[in-house]
Length: 94
Picture (cartoon, helix red, strand yellow):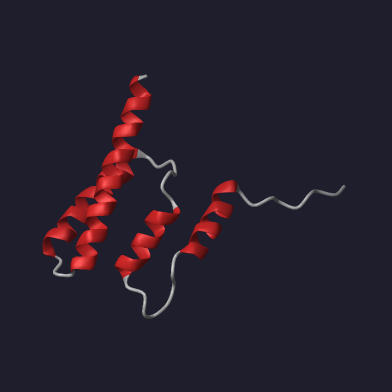
């Protein structure tokens, strides 16, 4: 009896594709990596609890950061998280 080789899951394949779009070098800052990740994945399903936790952590990091690039990335990320959560609530209500 032979079995077909296991096919990689769609999520795993998506993750590999997205990771190639995110700069990974010693000179790339976390804010630059975050900005690239946000540009690469604007619509990926995520549990709302993860979004809420990320927002709390990011908002606190933004308050304590002196790096303006980091603050800008945090504002963009939090805005996208809020939008995603609002869209999710709208789909549930409809």
